[in-house]
Amino acid sequence: MDAPATSKLRVATTSLAGCFGCHMSFLDIDERLFELLQHIEFDRSPLTDIKAVGECDIGLIEGGLCNAENVHVLREFRRHCKVLVAVGACAINGGLPAQRNPIPLSTILQEVYRTGPGLSNGGMIPDDPELPLPLNKVHPIHEVVKVDYFIPGCPPSSDAIWQVLTDLLAGREPALGHGLLHYD
Ligand code: SF4
Image 1 (cartoon, protein in one colour):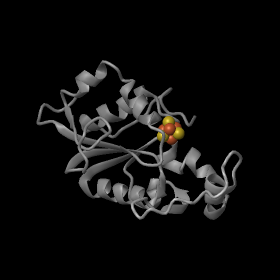
Image 2 (cartoon, protein in one colour):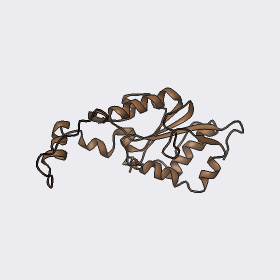
Image 3 (cartoon, protein in one colour):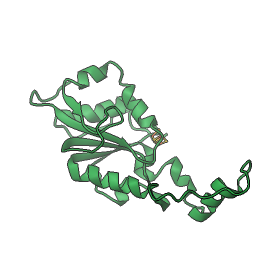
């Protein structure tokens, strides 16, 4: 890896309205993870037990925005990360969760919790104040914060994620070459 020999860069990752498939693809870089760890250290991430994002060089965001908590976490990442990367279709355009967008939220909640097949009578729509408020629509993250780079795919391949990370670590403009840029 052509990376600077200075102190390690801090990298944070999170999953908003995503399925963790992009994180699994990240882990598919396999033994290159050990090489990566010579150049980075993880901040907040599903890979660590750090609960709040600190000052970071790179933030990787999986998933779009389906509730108020997602928006809060995204804004925290934008505030603390010098470079923000949207990883995968859900972060870039809402992805699969955005398929609910044509249906009114109230209709979805009624069907899921009260009227759908197999539900017993008397079901209630959860309204505990600790639950994050759902948004009317699922939004891509660039509609709320500035995003510096995008890695498309559902999920992007581990090689694509590796390419972008190693480019950033080396101070290069990330470029996905032939075979790494795909949208499925
Ligand atoms: Fe999962 Fe695909 Fe969304 Fe990534 S882009 S979080 S793999 S559904």
